[in-house]
Length: 215
Image (cartoon, rainbow, N blue to C red; front, side, top):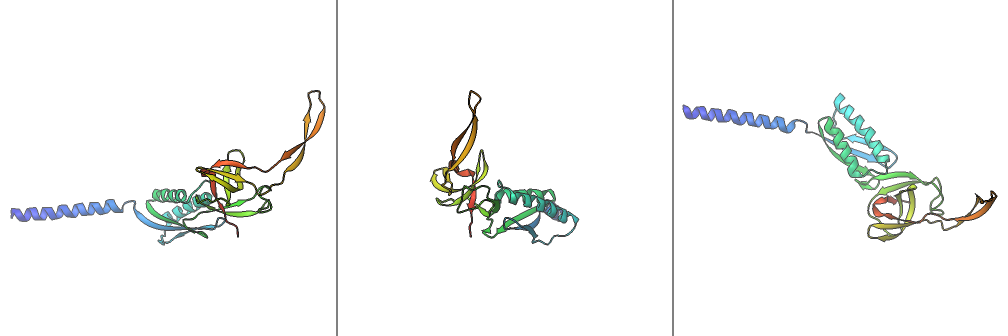
């Protein structure tokens, strides 16, 4: 009789532990598979788990707004975008599995930019629209978009790579002569001629956002 009591007690205890474990594992870990599709200009988010209801719709709306902003940002990476999506999903008690798909492949992130200036003439024209593949795989001869501490985003060609530095140069080799007015100490205004050439500069390799993908 005593043995039967302990057997029944043990079975009840195991049932309670199993139930508690199931509650702990399921709470806040509803899984959702999300696919971000982008070509650098248009971005869509697909919910492959086919979730429905107000909660999931609100989550998807929050994720969509965030992803569109992230894809357009020069500072984002595929990992930072996926991390942001997972963080938003977790606020709705979902565990998100995120994949990015672009014209360059899975988890390859494009960036849309517009050329501003004539430093890359004749290869690139002022106002030309470009798609950049965000990558750390750089080679001499690549046309890249980089962040310059003074001029912001610049489009240049890699001419040299030295350890963690890259030398960026302009395709436009013409020297422009500009007239500049200056005031002499005696108050006389004089026009002088100055030479203005396109920017060539060393930058840290990490300042390069990615490679321009020309057709």
